[in-house]
Structure formats: structure tokens, C-alpha cells
Image (cartoon, rainbow, N blue to C red; front, side, top):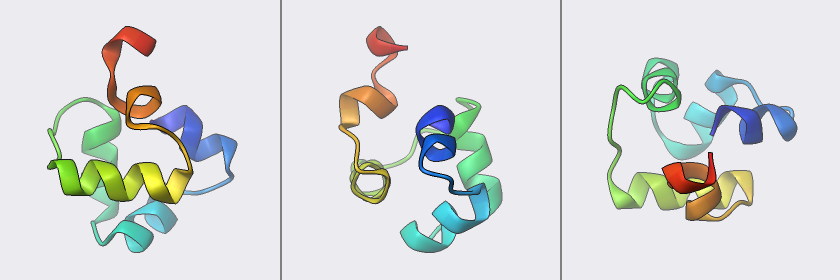
Length: 61
């Protein structure tokens, strides 16, 4: 997820604000230390304009 966020030029804080989370939570998600709900994953994917697979499926990392 981090590389897609950076690719669109967004900081953790900016992404957090857009999806209604804290910057710390975005950091935890990016470091695989937090499993977000499906709704949060969909919001992140929509905000970054990427598929769920691209952002969250380990098969694609």
C-alpha cells in the first residue's frame, strides 16, 4: 500500500484524513501490524484508485 500512496504523492496523514483514520493506523496497516476491516480497505483502494488485490493481496507483493 505504501508504494501506491507514494506514487500518487500522498502522505500518511493525507490518506488518513481522506479515509477517516489516524496517521498511526495507516502506518500500522503499511507495516502489516493491523488488519483493517473490509470497509476500510475499500475506502483506501477507492482513495488510491487501485484494486484491493494490488493493495492487500500478498500474492501481488
